[in-house]
Amino acid sequence: MTVGNLQAGWGATSGGRGARSASRRPRAVALRWVVAILLLAISALTIFPLVWLVLTSIRPANTVFGGSFFPSSVTLHAYATAWSSTDFGTHFLNSLMVTVATVIGVVILATLAGYAFATLRFPFKNVIYVALLVTLMMPSTSLIIPLYLQLKSFGLLNSRVGLVVLYVSSSAPFAMFLMRAFFETLPHELVQAARIDTAGEFQIFLRVILPLTRPGLATVVIFQFLSTWNEFIYANTVLQNTGRLPLQPVLFSLVGQYQTDWPTLCAGLTMSIVPVVAVYVWMQRHFVSGMTMGAVKN
Image (cartoon, rainbow, N blue to C red):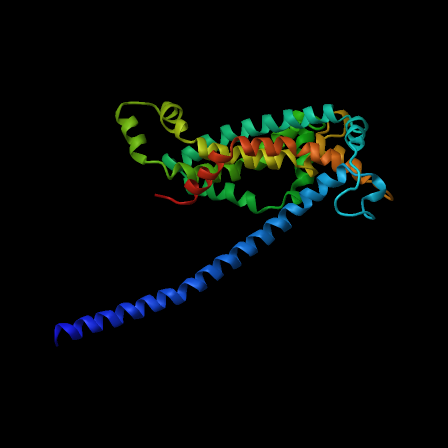
């Protein structure tokens, strides 16, 4: 075969590859456009309830279902009504105290238990771990009556302390599961090196491992803050004193049997989501890295 024939063959091959790559480019561009349109549609459907909530809170009550989507006039009267009619400040502080105490308790228990299950060896380790995970499969509504009777026998009924104990005990297994998955991504050589230096396990946990767990802690904090702040059933069951109720059961009382003041209800709900959004924005960077690192084991 001559050099000319080789060059001709190479040119034909290169031309064929170029034609195939050129034909694939419109398909790739079209696929990206389809994906972008689908993501925009999903984002619009996801954000629509929040936009409707905010717009309803600033519009007159007689235009909630009869007017246009965007209000023709803006009023903040519903926010003043929601604040005064529900004693919003008091119940906001109740929710804040219960949520902060629950988050602290869950973080402490989850980090200690996650570290123990990830790095330590002790009898019946797997059995205990599976037993804790089994509790995640039980619906919360099926546990209301036994938990109510248990808190009553402990004298913790109708108290914020009993509600915090209930929240911590029901949320710790899932948080422990997340922290164990995160601890397993950390280099085990760090623990071994600290043990060679005669460091105790609690000292290793505090000085070596804990400083590396910020992303995992952020993930647990955000999940726990969101679930505790928005919890309704346990709080409405355990607490009978209206002054001790957190925010969500009080806001639910704005829903009338025959008629509901929708702007006032939406104004209260809008104010109630501000702490959740603030916590997520504050810890967003650590939250994203914690979800990705905890999902894959090195």
